[in-house]
Image 1 (cartoon, rainbow, N blue to C red):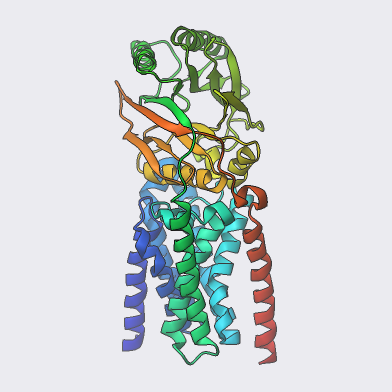
Image 2 (cartoon, helix red, strand yellow):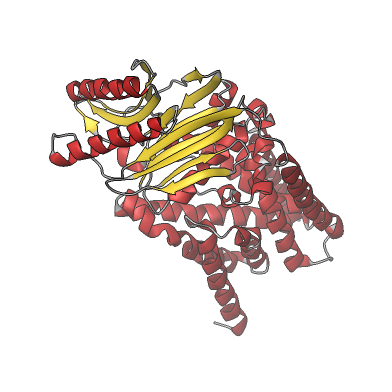
Length: 472
């Protein structure tokens, strides 16, 4: 191996290490603004199989950052398959972008990287069982001025701006000012970022309208097997005590986590009566997540009780996490008014899908109540993915998670209250926030229009680049 190849290999390893901090469950947001650009730059400066090989090396080092998490949520072979597919996706995106840039050597190709990335992200979001989990767009949810772009173009808009700057960096390292219209390309990339930040800063100045409403959130990490036991009695007694304490403090709506217990149908009916009685005795709206095992059918449900103890909604989870693929899926989008404010309910992974989040926005939900169950290590990422749905559609998110975070975030992605869940006796969170009507957003109206435009644009670029190569 020559000295040049050794240096390029070392660069691939270094980029891969940087990528680990971009794609992992607790990303370093600012690294996402240049590490993918360095990967593209390396691919542009190498040729043929060498370029592909270095891309695979960097991508594989990066995606294996999540190996412990993937092995926690699925068996070893599927986990290896997922990491392999993620590596191949990086190879496809970087390799396709490289082909377009090499074929035209023009400033407009600065659009290739973001267009192809958003196209892939959109297809994943709509065609795969886990959606666009791990999208680089979610790395920016702690950067609220950037995150506001989701109210216009969704996660695809955030990803486009992020990868546009990465693309400009890669082209600058590859061709500098020797490329046609290079100055214009770099100027446009910087201008788009400046405009995005300015728009976000302006949007965050909007006053928070509405009237105060108090929410109580409770979570106990312990999973109950569904068979009678002293532990089960203790956990449910503790939930009862926490509900009583929150109600006494003024909580009007109380949220428990997902799938606290999986019960046989007769036991489920008994538990419904118990929870309905709690709601009635404390005069609160109460939402609790439980599983029902009917033998041939398993259901992941959210029971929503009104202050008179009536079961107002029995929501069935739409999208299942890997360990629960055998559960049946629901298709309803319930929205109920509480003191004149529309509240919707969805369970955990449901809120990872922009299509579901947008549907609740179209139904004018101003608050989403989300019982959840995370895997502890993905707690912050799960919260960020969920609150992005709130930014996209202009609603508040109240979330109670086992092995995760209890949180309240507003329609702009600001976290208003947060606490970490714990095992018995658990954690409770009391939050009084201003709640009004849903904040209208462009994304709720147009959905993933940008994403599908990028799909068309990426196909056009691929076809044009191949024709250009044949003519050359």
